[in-house]
Length: 324
Ligand SMILES: [Fe+2]
Image 1: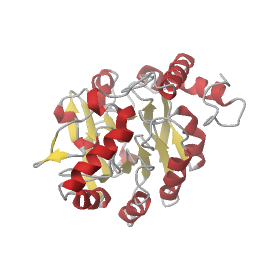
Image 2: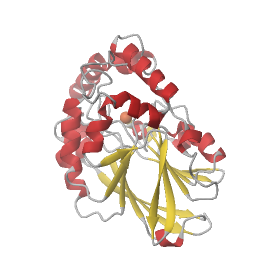
Image 3: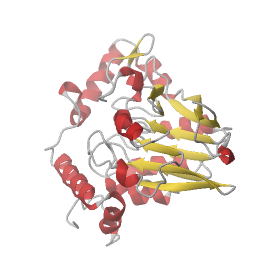
């Protein structure tokens, strides 16, 4: 596999072997094949004029349209106006030691889209108290080529985060950026789960690879070491895995990917979400059977650094025990 993506591949000779053990060999092969196709312009993300690989042209057209209508400045100010959104989650299975546990969620930073973003995120993080930080993917905006610029921008933000940090990859992320992200202190969950312990009690945090484009997610693999009756929290870039998550007993799922629509109609109604889920799952808290979930509107933005009727968010989830 060492002929794959030399421009972005890490130097470690055992890198792909190590990733294969974590993600699953078949999933790694699928991911690398799809990444190669993407680099060779053989694979396309999205549909119609919104295909992601047309974004270079599309972003110019969309930006020009907003400039001509005089709305660009307002949309850019909205993009940098990152709000703290609080979400209280009542979980029947939450261990008592985790009462009041706070999870900070960021997602869809797309840090190479606009150099002004890190400063805005750092300002928005100021003063927030949390126990754990998670990121549900899409650290860069470009979907191919070298990821170094987006990693430098992401690292600026991560210097200001403390405590344990976990994340998953999104549909804009190549597997080769895992070492850079983990060097920032963020463990990437590649169809994996880790136990979080407090006062001898355990909460499991699982993360799956991208289900939207790469389709290399494997929730059964991620949960293979998790006791069935344990309290389980899942990071899934796209919320489209909600039915499978509910079927496998996940208690709470955190997602992003939709950007909440990003360019929304008055009232916050999205025009497009790039996600095969009902609109109720496209942003904010939702429920499916016994599964509770939250889809963030995103901390950054995609395609153009603009937002309308859809504020960017950093989300603070507070867990509490009770009948949800
Ligand atoms: Fe995204």
